[in-house]
Structures are given as structure tokens and as C-alpha cells.
Length: 181
Image (cartoon, rainbow, N blue to C red):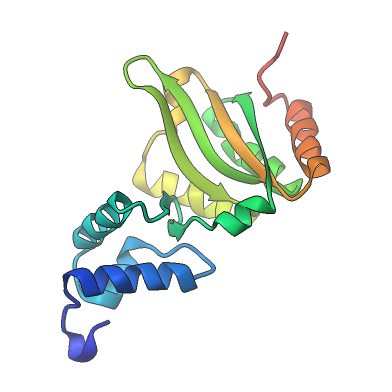
């Protein structure tokens, strides 16, 4: 927060936000950033948009804002998987992925008007899954997969090929992988 509760203005605020994102090992919420800078959450949303327009690799997740770390990506393998399940099975799907060493990077659905709609998730453990599900409940929002009768894609990250395989086997055993017949 600014000295003596003063607002941190414009470019100085955006530079601070960027610095805090670089230093943080967890997502920072818009509310947290607004408290630190003594401005409204809407101002933070605008600042994030301006930073993204400058090609800063900021990702908005269900847990808050994170700065994409290219070095981290080099250490992780990715696979896109096709899933289908009811909204009631979302918790089980997320737990299955994270319990087998995966991170749910995003979710994508194909919308008839807009084409592919993708939302960043970055759910890596049960706590983050529970936080996502809690936010879903509190906001009374709909899952993207509800637009497509439960059909959706996930980009899954893991540190090894064997972890990716374990995630896929476990999802198949649960009946969540879309049948590829």
C-alpha cells in the first residue's frame, strides 16, 4: 500500500503489480492488489489489461493473477485431453488429475458462435481444486462444459511422461475421458 494510505498512481502502480507478480509463488487476487495499492479492484482489472496489452505474460486464473514463467514451462510436459462428465463429477475429475501428479492448466469448450473458449485454471492440488469449486459455488457461475453437454478439453501439465500417462489412465478408469472409438 502507498505510504500513509495514499493511492499509488498509474505507471508506478502497474510496475509494482508486475514486481509483486514476479516475486509471488502463488496467485495474487485483484482484491489483494487493490488493498496494497489503495485503489478499487476495477482499477486493478484495468491495470492488468494494460500490462497484458504490453505483452506481459499475466494469466488470470480462478485463484488470482499469475505471471507465466517460461522457465517453468520447459520443465513440464503438456497433453490436451478430451473429457465429458456432469457438473457433479467436476471435483472427482480435478482430484483424479492432481492426485496423479498433474496440473489442470486450462479448460476449453467449442462454442457455436465464438469458437473455442478457453479459461486458465492452473489447479495443481486438492486445496486449489477446493478453492475453485468453492468459488464456483459462491458465485453461482456455470462451468464452461455446461455449454457443451459436459464435453471439454483440458491442457494437463506434469513433470514426466509417466505422470501424464497415470493421469490419463485414472481419468479413463473413472469414465471421464471422451470415448475415442
